[in-house]
Image 1 (tube, rainbow, N blue to C red):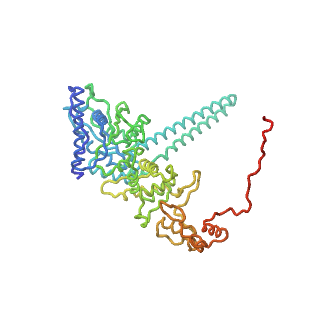
Image 2 (image 1 turned 45 degrees about the vertical axis):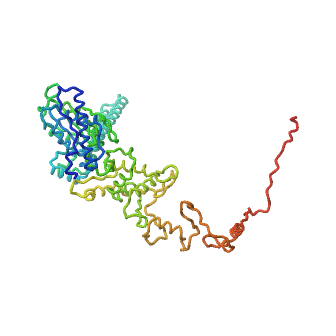
Image 3 (image 1 turned 60 degrees about the vertical axis):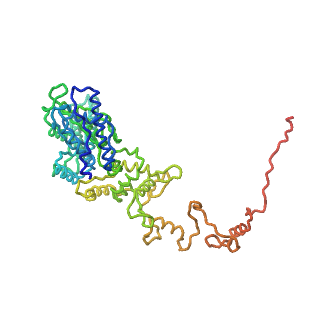
Length: 574
């Protein structure tokens, strides 16, 4: 059903326009076209009972997309490498071909613009995973490229740090040379020449060290990527060269003044929080666009001069309409903001379903307990088990009773998932999730080897104790097959020697944690305690007195009187 009605999920088109139209006519025409688009999606939801994801309903935001597409010669759709199909809008590629002329004016010709799918955050994928996606996009005829804005920014920062360190070292050497020249001004010429040779040798050594500093920045997958150039993560210079090769001929475009276009305009379009602004910053080499982890940071499209012949155009993040699975998918994909989340169980359950228990325990140093069959469990961990364990280990408690704060724990876990601390990559069609992520999970377990375990129970605020996982009692040589709750009740009821424990309590909402009562009408009933043990000494006397409704005294024979204190007569004040 979804495949049959997929063509109805279209990007709202800007209606045809000409330069002879007034501003009021153009505004009215755009509003009517947008209203028809909204009406079509509403019919799809109500009449055909399809569930759609939350999508952008503001006309002004879609107008930003229209302006970017009309300005751009090459439209780059940026997607997240962890789920490319979720962030890819196929209808947007069709819309790019429908935009006419240089500014979208009616009758100026269609099909002049080109599209490119840029798979950002490709450093989160292994070489094998990138080759799998390359095979899929080649089969559907999509032009793509792998890129990592984070890696590009890290390389640029490391290069700047190395240059700054080299300049600082050179400045120190220059100052030392000046001081040495002043101190040895009257020395012999032979000594001065030897000093110069020593300084030059030091400079050569420092240059060698700076070059060696850049060597560890190379990736471990370079050898595998070289075997298949399709799966290579492009550098900034390689990506710029790709833009030039893929872009259409500028002779087919004219500027607003009627002259031939001389600058290549590249439009960057995509969902919120996929890295559009980060990609621009990595291309420029310094921070030009505001970047935030909260989706929707860019509010208005903006143009940035990349070179004398290339201009970047950043579009605000747009949530395109799609057939929905659950709202939790959008939260885990980073489309919806986590801090504004009210229901946390669904997204956390999706994280627990995708990430194996061993990876969760190794990443956070936890020991997550599965519910036994007698407690309603099925052998797998649930979102509640994970959240309670995480909250106890981190000390997140609610005000009042001090119960684990599951909502706060869920926000931390979901942010770690969006930021790829908990890494899960969706596979291409036809590949299972376990087989696609097996190598990723193995790497996560290797990175967590030797990590300390977090406390499994609540500890003090300043505690520095880490409890090992799966604590076993010294006398428990047989593996317990019952649940934790049943084992706790048995251990509390029976003593170590096999007899009944001397701490009988009743459980219930009315008498929670209080001792149970029994009939004490006859004398022999007062000679033993509630657990059947005989009473001796003072305990027997107290029981006998209480049976006769007497008052238990302190046992002392003397009585303390009020001490006499000095009293003044008041004489002399008359």
